Picture 1 (cartoon, protein in one colour):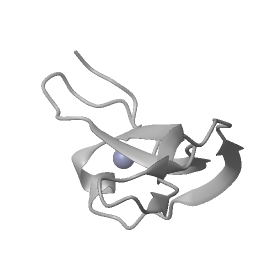
Picture 2 (cartoon, protein in one colour):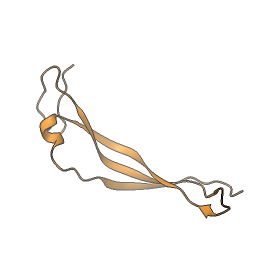
Picture 3 (cartoon, protein in one colour):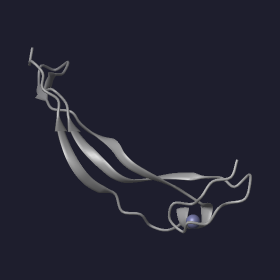
Amino acid sequence: MSFRCQKCNEVQVDGTKETKVVTEVRKVIYPTVKDSYGKYRTPEGFETVKELTVCPECATHKFTTTIVDLKVIEGEVE
Ligand SMILES: [Zn+2]
């Protein structure tokens, strides 16, 4: 299936491998948990906000990933 590269805007020929590049993420802070040692820790992670589908040529370029949002998931600490 062909696709259009979202960086150079070229329509790619059938069979071209598409690469997903994450350009925007949201930082997620999860509820604080108590680990097996009895220590409290607050896990953090990232969720994809925006990703581009690019051709192999563009995939070799350097992309910057921007943190655009912060989500705090509330929870009870046991
Ligand atoms: Zn491209």
